[in-house]
Length: 164
Image (cartoon, rainbow, N blue to C red; front, top):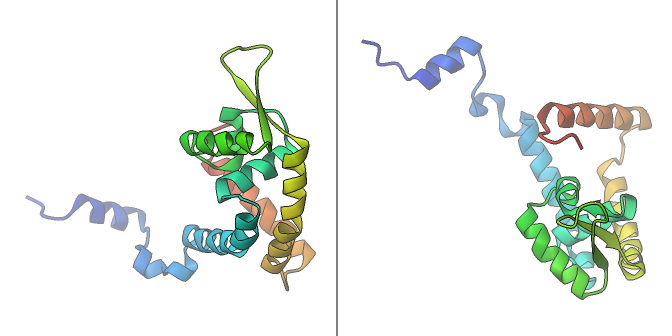
């Protein structure tokens, strides 16, 4: 009878190092979470001043580029759970920043549109988003930025569950 833990055997068989061997500073998911946490924190003061949360900010940002998305599409693009997005949309609509409209082809589906006030709010936030973006890439060449973005796009294709 073998007392060896099957999980340990799997790690040995595939030679996948443990997190402690890799180290947090060499583990991309950890680094990506730290970066996005810092990015969101750098915007928090301005978002609060504008009455926004991270899900609301992401919603306005996505709609500023892809207006009129179905709620399920918006959830994917904004990286926000549908239940959280629904609450954010309630507030954004109440504040006059978005408008929900029944889809003309499917009465069960709802499309979300940015209002002029919503676009103006996003435009007020944009300089802060742009500054945080520039700070993030300070000292990184344009070529390295393009390579990094291409790598992220490939990673997204590898992990995504939706076609968008």
